[in-house]
Image (cartoon, rainbow over all chains, first blue to last red; front, top):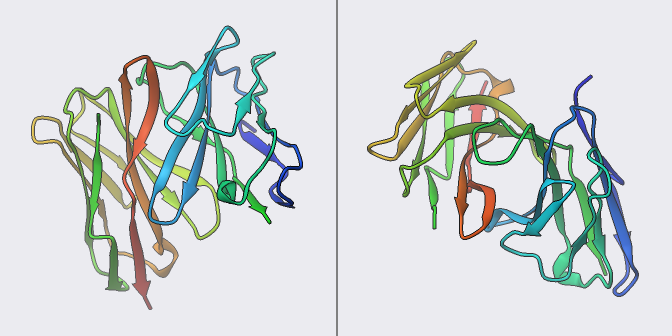
Length: 114
Length: 114
């Protein structure tokens, strides 16, 4: 089944404890990205990757890192999480960037930082 | 920068009624427009993708239209059912200043009353 998977689905952690949220897609997509969703603010892009060579910032990259060492995986890293990073996170993929293709979303990771 | 607006923010209708959800965007130079459904605390499910060259796209009881020149799209739901209750989001690709992302509206929360 073609899908985007994220792990963990739920995570409660403490301020400053490094964490990684994994994202994997099995559709051989070039483009992958991360979004966060907050009440009243909607979905905002954190980082995106056009391919394994190119990764760049979205609208809200502060406090996050990403890595694209292979096409199928695009982990989101929080080196020192803070309470304002409590949010619902989504990974997405698309055959390519440039805006012409449908995007597919993972099931989401609900992160709580205390 | 692209801005996407969805009105109304919430809508409540009796079961069986036909309804229209609205989406407007400020920059008409889009490649496509995508409609998603999101159930509470869950991921995004893609409903319809309309390419910029298309005027309409249909899937079952759903029909989406696109008018690029006026910066508008509508999602028509026929014979609504309680299972249609969810938040509906529209999104357009935005590519500018070296970034590429989907810009989302904040959604319309639909409640279908049995």
